[in-house]
Image (tube, rainbow, N blue to C red; front, side, top):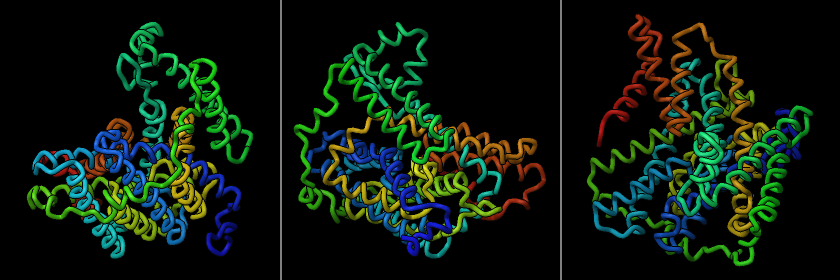
Length: 474
C-alpha cells in the first residue's frame, strides 16, 4: 500500500483512507438508484432499461475510480454527474420526438454523444489541452471555486437532497418548504401527511450535522462518517417510532442478483449511430459540444476546488497529477458510454472523503470497490437516508467556505468573478456554468479597464465560448 499510494508522504494511513473512502461512498451512494431513476423516468421506460443503467452506473463509476486511484493517486470519486444525467434524459426524449424512435432506441442513440465526448476528452487530456485550460483560469477565479462549491453543497444538503412526497404533492424540501414557510401550521397544511417525515428529516439532518461538528472539534478521526451513521440510526428509529414504518422493509423483497442480462440486452455497447445522425449533423455536433463544455468545467471546478481545500495545490493553485486525473475522468465517461449511462464525472461529494482525511488514491479505490459491490448489495446501500447525507454535505460546504479568506476583497477584479460564482453555483446547480460566469466577468472587467493584456488568449476563447453557449439557441 505504501509503495502504491505513498501514504506516509501524503500524511495519511490505510485506516484513514479506508474511512475516507467509506465516507465518500455514503455521501454519494444516492446516485446508484437516482441515476437510473432519472434516465428511465423512474422505471417508466421499462425495468430492463432501469436495470441496465443501474449496472452501468456501478461499473463505470468503479472503472473511473480505479484509474483515479492508480494513475493519478488522488482521492476523488467519479460517477454519472447530476445535472448532466437530467440533461441527457431530456435530450433522449427530444431524440424520440424528432425521430419517432422508442425511448430505448433513442437512449442508445444518445449514448453516441457520451462516446464522442469521452473520446474527445481522452485526446484533449493526453495532449495536455484540458490541463492548459485549467492553467488559463485566473488565480483569483480558481481561489473562488472551492467556496462556491461549498455554497452549492450546502444548498444541496439543506435544499434539494431530501425531498418529501405526500398526497398533497411534492417534492417538498427543508429550506424552501419547511424553513421557508411562514408558520409551522402552514407547512403542515401544505405537506399533508408528509409533514411528520419532513420534521424527522430536519431533526435528523441537524443532529447529524452537530454530531459531526462536535466530533471534529475534538479531533475524532472519521467524524463525518460517525455523524452520518448517528443520523441514520436516528432516522431509522424515527421511522419505526413516530411514522410506524419498518425502515428495513424493502430488504424483504429485494433481489441481490446482479441483472447482467438486462444490461447486455439494453445498454452494453448498444450504440444507435443511425438514430443519432437522424437528428441532423448540426444538432448532433451542437449536442456533443454542449456536453463537452458542461462536463469539462464541472470536472475542472471539482478537482481544483476540492484539491484547494485539501491543500493539494501549489502556490499558484495548480494540482500535481492533474493530467492523470483528467484522463481518469475521460476514461470514466468512455466506460459509461460503453456500459450504458450518461457522462461520468468527478463528484463534488468527494469533498466529504477529503475532509475525512483522504489524500491518496486508496480513498478513491475504496469508494470504487464499494460501488462495484453495490451490484450485489444495492438494497443495503439504499437504506442510507438522504437526511444523513445532508448532514455531511452541509458540514463540508461550511468548511469549503473557509477558502474565502484567500480572496482579496479589496481587489474588484478578483471579488466580482468570485461573487458571480458564489451566487451562480448554488442557483444554477452547475459548477461549469458558474465558472463560465466568473470568467466572463473577469474578462470584461479587465478588457474595459484597460488591462486586456493581462488576460490570456485561452481565457478570451473560453469566455467567448461560454457567451455563445449561454445566448445561442441551437
